Image (cartoon, rainbow, N blue to C red; front, side):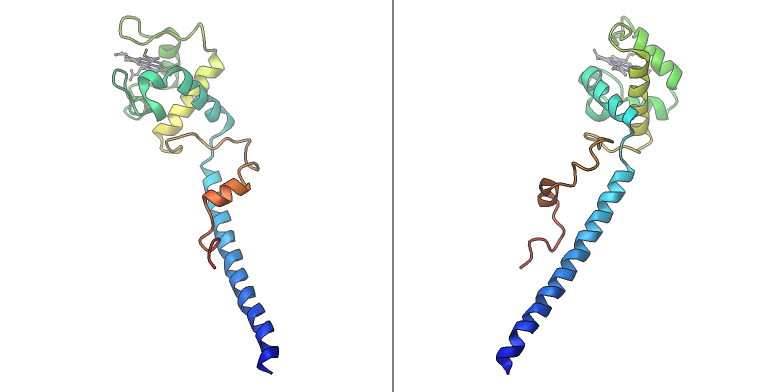
Length: 157
Ligand code: HEC
């Protein structure tokens, strides 16, 4: 008799563990959804790329300021610059003060995109680091992501 009960009981335990596992999976999916809410817009993502290529060496990674150039987040929050003056400083530079002109290498859209990125950093909407790319939504839900950020019970016995 006890021999007969063993099987189903083990199945119950396995099923219960499975339910716990699925629950944890769901909550981690919910956390990922939240992360998506802070995702960069296409313009901000392009702005980040241009910022890293053209500005970060002086103004610092993640727009936090560098050794010789100011923190552009602070320039915005303190009201030292707005979108219009930002764009004209970037375009014309400040010759003699170490800020090179970019009108020959960046077009208006690229400069506006950089402003959008720095503004999002200034408002705290985008965290430091590479922003979540707006178009890679699905490719992020792959096995590598799961193994890097496993749900708590993923590796549980
Ligand atoms: C070679 C170093 C260097 C690079 C590259 C550089 N900057 Fe600057 N930038 C400076 C310096 C130095 C200043 C401060 C000039 C001054 O004292 O008025 C400055 C000032 C500025 C200001 C004015 C800030 C304020 O508070 O008045 C803006 C806006 C700005 N930079 C944006 C950018 C952007 C955007 C890029 C990339 C496209 C960039 N800079 C690339 C060195 C640099």
